[in-house]
Each structure stands twice: as structure tokens, then as C-alpha cells.
Amino acid sequence: MRAVQITRFGGPEVMDVVDLPDPVPGDGEQLFDISSSGVNFADTHQTEDSYLAPQTLPLIPGAEFVGTASDGGPRVVGLLAGGGYAQKVATDPRLTWPVPDAVTDEQALAVVLQGTTAWHLLRTSAHLAEGESVVVIAGAGGVGSLAVQLAKRWGAGRVIATASSAEKRELAESLGADATVDPALADDDPKSFTAALREANGGKRVDVVLEMTGGHVLDGSLSALAPFGRLVAYGMAGREAPKPINVQSLMGTSRAVIGFWLAHCFGRPEMLDQAMGELLPLVAEGALRPVSGGRYPLTAVREAHQDLRARRTSGKLTLDPTR
Image (cartoon, rainbow, N blue to C red; front, side):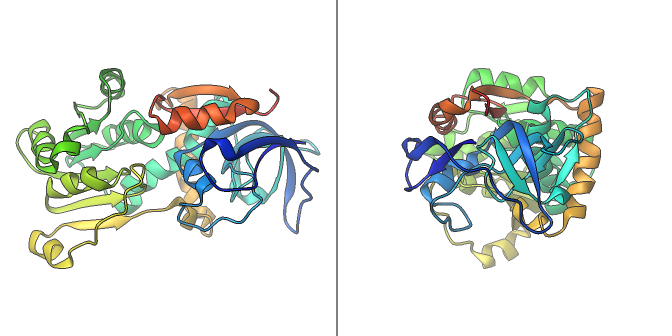
């Protein structure tokens, strides 16, 4: 089979398209033929070994796929510990879900990891209550674009999205954001970013922040929280080491900082079933709109990572293993 292999850590340049033997299923696993592979920002951390879990070489990146079992069956979308940037993968079928006919490969890939992340950020970690204000950092991204829609659907009082360009801010507003803010404000002064978030919320502090950048954006977001507000951190796209959290400050302001990593749901598949059982039908009905960020040939995987890291994309990126 053809696959993307990493034999050294680094940037996009370390990903090579090579021919490898087909994977051999282990106990409880099935072999799947992949029709589409998903690309996530976490994959860019995996290639340089800066991810939450240490990586072992050689490796095939990729945490999600759409395909069919090699011995036949329905089209499914699945989550993986790795190996998705390939033409075939062996994995546990318990972490796969049938894809409705009305849902495309790209849409299924958008919801299986980024959609379930958005679902759990709001429901499981933030415990969003009706009427609360929500700030979605990177509101035009894969997780953010879905979180904006879900927050509105679940009764958020006001949804504020950050996005780095006028086009991305317009996209976030088209998905339901009530206001948008340029995160570049945080580069110069986190206080300016805090003030912009409060202004976008009618002068009030905000209740929930979904944060995946780190650095000054995290600092400014935390300062914008109201008492009993929750900041859920689920990424470090800015690649800055986070500052230590001041527990005394959290107590003095009645704020909470919560971490989330979808990998912890792998051991509790029912948590993923719950999210996928709601998300896939919404997409099929047209009530939830995954944003396509572009489909790249497998041979252009380096370009896909370059575009993602340079923030030239919006929504979900996918790879075509046939090209």
C-alpha cells in the first residue's frame, strides 16, 4: 500500500510518501480500505514529537479515516491512534460508525474528531447552560466552525468567535457567531484582547471560552471570564509553553481552567457514540454545516501541513489516498 511515513521528527518536510506492506490486523481488529483521510492540527505536533503523547519512529500519522472493510460492508468513519495517512489501516471496528448516504467523506471526517471534540468541549467540559456567552477561539477552524454552530443550537446567549482574517471572521458570522474579534490584538497586549472580548459581549465578562492557541490569547481569554466562567483548553497552536496556573487567582475570581483531550474518550467509546449519534444525523439533515478546507492528494501531504500551519485554511482538510 501507499502511505505517508515519518522516520525523523521535524516539520512538513519529514513526511515521505512510500510503499509499505499492508497492515496485518491484530486481535479484535479489522482491515479497512481508506477512501479519505483527515488532517488535524494535532498531526503537525505529531510530526515534530511535540504532541501530548510521545511518538515512536517510524510512524504513519493520521487519526481518522473514511473507508470500508476489506471483506465488504458499509462505508464507515473511524478514529485511530495513528496510521490514517495511508490506503489501508487495521483498527478496532468499535471506534467506527456507519456514514449516512447523505453525508460525504469530507463531512464525516469533519465530525468524527473535530465535531466530537466540539461536542464534548461544550457539553462535557464547559457544561454550557442556556443563555451563557461563549467565546470560540479560531472560530473558522475545524473544531471552531462546528463549536460556533453547536453553541448557537444549544441556546448560547451570545457566541463570539476569533479569526485571523476578514474572510475567516465573515465565515464565522455566517455560521452563527454574533460577533468576531481579531486574535492579533493579543500579540501586542493581552489586555486589549480582553477588552475586545468584553466589548463583543456587550461590555460584560464572558461565561465560556474554548481555547486552543495558548500564549497571550489564553491569558487575555482567562482575564475576560466572569465569575463561575470556564476556560476549556484543548490545544497549543501557538506552540508557546503555557504559564503556570495561579490557583489562588482562580479561587479569588471563581473561575475554572479545564483541559480536554479527545484521546481519553477512546477508552469510553460510549462517549463517542453519544456525540456521533447526534452529529451525523444533524449533518445528514443539513442542520449542521461542516466547512471543507480542501482536499489534497496524498502526495501533497506536505503542502497540506504547510497550509494548515500557516493558517491559510478554514474548516476540514482531507487527503485522497488514491492520488
